[in-house]
Each structure stands twice: as C-alpha cells, then as structure tokens.
Image (cartoon, rainbow, N blue to C red; front, side, top):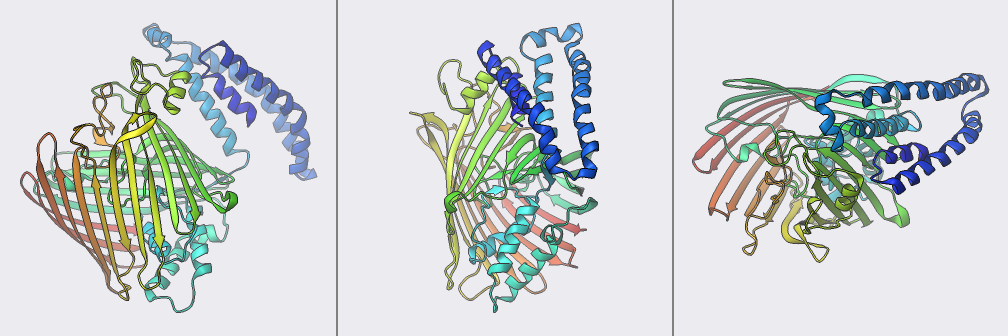
Length: 563
C-alpha cells in the first residue's frame, strides 16, 4: 500500500524535491515488497494453495512492467492539436494521475477489500433510524453524513434490537421488524455474489407552472410545466470484493424524453474504510429539508470518495471521516471543469451529542493551475483572498443533541457555515436550526419537525454561493450544490406526520423570503399520503399549492417496488 500511494504521489510532484521524495519512498516500498511478501503469502494461504499464489505473485512483476511500457507509450502519444494542452499540464500527466488513482483503487479492491453498497439518501430507512435514535434505542449512530452503507445500517439495526425492551410501542416493533428484514443478508454475514434489481420507481407529476418548490432536492431532476413522468430502476451487485449500483432513469415530458444514468458507482471496504468511485448523492449536515454545503439539490457528482460509514471509537468517541474530489461540468459559463473537493469529520463524544466539521473548496479549471501545490494551498486554506488565490471555499460546523427523555424525546440541531475567510476563520455565516419530535407525549403515531434557515447579511448582500472567479457560483449543471434557497434568504419549514394503520399522512408548510436583490415571498402547502400496498410495494399521492410569482398547483402519484 505504501509503495502504491508513493507511486501515485509521484504523478503529482510539482518539482524536483517532491519527485525525489516520492521516488525514494517507492524504492523503500519495492525493497520491502520483494523480500517480505512471499513469507506473508505463505502465512495467509494453506499449503495446497501456496504454489498457485506464488506463481501469480511472481508473474505480476514482468507482466506489469510490460504493460507499463505499452500503456505509457500510448498515453505519451498525442495528436498535434492536443500538444498545447499537454504543455499546460493536461494530456500525458493527467492520464498518469488518473492511472495512478486507478492502480491504488484496484489494489484496495483485491487485497483486503470486501463488498458493500449505500442506502440511498431518499430511503425511508433513515426516518426509522432517526426515530430509534431519538427514542434512545440507537446511541452510536452518526446520521449527519449521508449516505451510510448497508453494513452500517445492519450494525445500527443490531444495536436497536439489542437495546429494545419488552413493551415497546407497536410502531417501534414494526420498525424493528422492517429493518431486520431489510438487512437480513448483512446480519447473517452472507457475502455470496448476488445480482438483483433493488428498487423500481414510477412517478407522475402535473404542475401548473415550473414551481420553485417542486425542483428542490430531486437530484437535479427537473419538474416542468404540464405533465412529467419519471421511471427508474436501481440494480445492485454484491460480491466478496466489490459492490456495484446502477440507476438508469427515463424522464418523459410533454415535448421531449430524456434518458440519464442517474447513479452508478463501485464501492469496496478495507476494514471500516470505504473507497468509492462513481456517481452517487451526498448530504452533509443534520438538516432534513436542506443542507448548507452538500445536498441532493443538484445532480449527483461523479467522485472519488474515501470515507467510513462505520465509526471508529478511540477513547469511546465515535469518529467518522469523509473526503471526496470531483471535476465539475465542461459547459460552465465561467471556468470550465473546475475541481471541487471536500472534507468532513463527525464526532460523537457521548450518546446524546454529535458534532461535525465540514469544508468544501473549488480550484483549477481551464486556464487555472491544477498542480499538487495548488491543491495543497486549497486544501490547507493558504492564500484565500490574496492575489493568485487557489479558488473558492466555504466551511462550517454542526451540532446535534438527542434527548431520549421518556415523557417527551426530541432531537435539536444547528448547522452553520461561513462563505468567506477572515483571520483564518469562516465569516459571513449561514445558519440552519431544527427540531424533531418522534412523538408528542403519549401520541406515539404523531411526529413533528421544524427547520429554519437564514443567510441574509445586509453588510454583504449577494455573497452566498458566489465567487468573483467562479461567477456561475457553487453550482453543478446550474443547480446549487448546497441549500436550495440560495443567497439572501430566510426559510421556515414545518411538517407533521401521522402514522395510521392503513396509511401515513404528512402535512407541510414552507415560507421562503428572498431579501436581495428583490424582496419577495414564496409559500408552499403540501399534503402527502403514503399507502403500503404490500410489504414490498407502496403508493404515494401528494398535492401541493404554492404562491410564487403566480399561483401553482402540483399533484404527484408515485409507485415504488422494492425487490
């Protein structure tokens, strides 16, 4: 592993000294690799396997060397029209960097990796986990960074089952039974290869106009005026070494039809670390109606991500970490294909307090530096607001307090982030406050939830999600990557949910006030009824009325089947 990472770093060396250090590390790795590996292989495999394993091991060295000459020559050969790009840091070196990343990723897959996949962010399973957390049945969950893996979902399910006492409400018993059925493979430690469809969704939407509220948190999917229909099928492959998820989606409008690959990723675990490459949604923060830095408002990013859904517990403190890096779209109106990266740390020092630190930054793009030194300046926040600054950034913190008080449990949370830097700390703040009640006193079927977000600063109007270099802002395909309310806004969201035996009814109200450059208010009222037709199939009907630039009525009918 040390050797492979050093090889990858050599591709990013900006000068002689860093290249020398990386190559020296490669030499140390090679010297250790050749002498220690045969003995380790002899320990790891039984006698009848050793001859075959050692033959593959010694064959890999000459075959890899030969492929290096072939692939390296192909990467170096470029048509004349691309030579200018090569001189500016693209071309050959960008291919070498990509191959280095792929090599490290493949090594992780086939060394100590095992398979896993994520629980989709729109899954109702997260509502179950939040309720069990608020009721005190789960004490080690860290749900401010989503998605979590299915293995982590199974771990939380096992914890809830272990903490469940007799005499729980019928609703909690139903939730526990549902989770136990959902994660039966993971709970049984079943790692046999399995390819199967996971979920199928069919949704019909009618809208009088292109409603603002209809667009929020839909993974960038557009709801247009008139009739819209959406069909998607998610398939999942689980094996010993790698998990694969693919989600194609068909969008049908009155005047056109679009086919997109909404999600597709590979995921493998090494111990608790997750290595993902591909296209998947992300959500950073305890908020449920919106998130400041990363949300499902924009189309899922195609990223390389390293994380751990299952927390480590040094000194009894739950710790999770996430790092990702991606490249944004080519057809931006400001700087084409800038690089976006982010890092987040979650801590849970006690069973009822959880807090996180988050930061995202944008740098590079066509005509701007993308070398390792620029990345390091962006990563370590060096030179912000100076001439020649590496790029754009925003950072913040969040806190969640769980109060599993038996008469009235509750969850309180705060999410805060700064758009700019002042004296090495974030400034120009965006605040989000929330409260969740899993029940109201003895009314175990009633849930209440409220959230308030505000980022208006009269001293610095128009600052959030904007930048003087990346003038298209903190967007991907023209959708804000963070909170959908944008800049200079105040938003109040209230929701109640009642769980009948036959169906679940949700009523919500939202009031959004924009304060710059024009002061106006939007309101939205919505009623949703969810009916579980069978254990695997549910039907959802939703009707909404919004007062925006003009009044708008929207209806949705959705059918979802889980295989």
